[in-house]
Amino acid sequence: MMRLVTHGVRILILAAFAVFFVVPIAWLILAPTKSDEALVTHGPFTFGSLHNVALAWQHLDSFSDHIYRAWIANSLGYALGATAIVLVTAIPAGYGLALSRFPGRKLVLTLTLVVMIMPAAALVLPIFLELNLLHLIGNALSVILPFSFFPFGVYLAYLYYATALPRELLDAARIDGCGEWSTFRHIALPLARPVIALVFFFSFVADWNNFFLPYAVLADSTQYPIQVGLSNLLSSTPSFNPAVGGGGQQVGIFRPELALATLLAVVPVAIVFLLSQRSLVRGLVTGAVKE
Image (cartoon, rainbow, N blue to C red; front, side, top):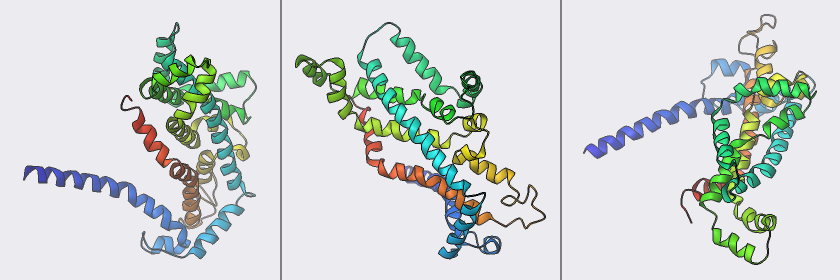
């Protein structure tokens, strides 16, 4: 009896959390299907029409000379560019830390862990000063290069190579005459596909959602990533946020466009997750048990 009560309490708690998270997402998905008036007067979970979605997209896309498209393209460029550099650097770094013994190795691992737990906002000021010294402020590299520093990816690769990679395969490759680079390229790298997918996903999501650093180093709104652009859209543009000013427009106006803009900003992350879901699951569990 006690077990049933405990099980029921767990289900209730999980259901409460599910409702707490699902309700806003459901509203966000349904909001672009309604007109401005229907969004205020009809129920929050009623479906409007796909025609309203098309109208909302036309209004959003025409805003400020198609700047929303530029924000999406900027985010894709920043996130994919930085993630490519992360994969090229983090995977070999994790491999070297896991399988090599050199002076300062423990210090490097400790510093990696320390930087992982530091708030990202704490590094914005020193990064800004460094980029300013190199005259990179306002340049795309001022976003891509800091994003390319991803110690969590190094640590994930380190955990994988330290716990899940059979050392016998590496020893056999060395006996056959492979050097360290050939061993890594032909043996260690192909076996690390799950952790590569894991590093790719976490790096891409972190770069896509990063707000503070691009906000600090980019001054031109046409260079904004989508997160900074959405903030600018919501807080600084009267036509999209009448509460700021906008000539006495009704509070409900343009909210379908805002909901659509927010929803579309999530789509690339959802696509990346769906494409790499199987590899993500394998990568999460691979290093849990020593093979």
